[in-house]
Amino acid sequence: MLKSTLRWGILASVLASTTAFAAAHGGLTVKASDQDMSGGTVTADTIMAEKNGWMVVHRTGSDMKPGPVVGYAPLKAGENMHVTAILTEEVKSGEMLMLMLHGEDGGMKTGIFEYTLGAKEDGPVKVDGKLVMTVVTAK
Image (cartoon, rainbow, N blue to C red; front, side, top):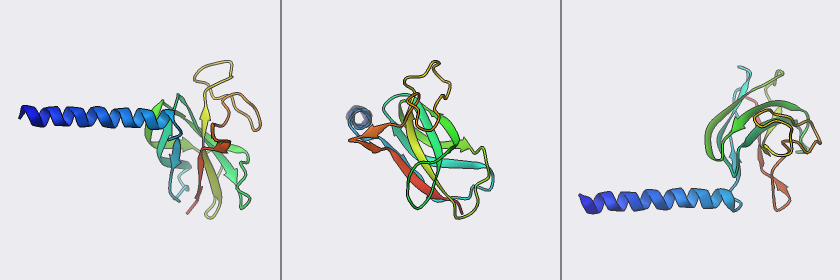
């Protein structure tokens, strides 16, 4: 029994270390699927963030460029599961949204979302010059 408990303890420690390492070394991700948004929300399945920040919801189109912000939700450092943002405007079936990882840096107040399109406050997180994001389509 002691060996089994020890093995599980070691495994749990390795998994926790691996998660922390991934977050600190480019394992930052936003994962989500196409979904029904008729209830006025959009949900990311998993977001890995290095530090506290935001999931920011941008409108986008076939050009895959981030457009106006239509929602956001706070994130904690590490793994965030089932992150839901309330949408500030209706999203129709077939429209696309970009769910993007933003930081909590450069603003005047911690815990207050201060980003506006193109600003540096609470701005997008990039890894190797690329935005950490995914695009979903409303069903």
